[in-house]
Length: 131
Image (cartoon, rainbow, N blue to C red):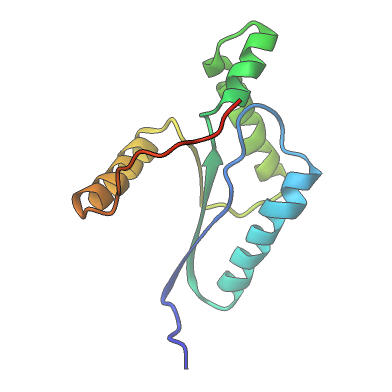
């Protein structure tokens, strides 16, 4: 018999902060994770649901150039829009943050540092195709 988990962490793909969420995002990612989170809560499970805006990536830079603004202005605008959209839809995230937060930087750094210190990374050279 499988061991029952005591605590649950539910997360989903982080939306890029370069535009609003749309029905495809909601149907494919966020509504299913929200349903699962609510199901676990109804069962009385200890669950936390975490998500946030992904503020890194070329799409953000491209959008900023098209609009003649800085990438920071783009992510600030769309992070707030996305967050309000999720709140308006009643999504049950316990934490909705952003990848530029100090907590994210510290957590990600600690996570990868631990893996590095444990020798989990392999450095090698390989040929790759590109165009």
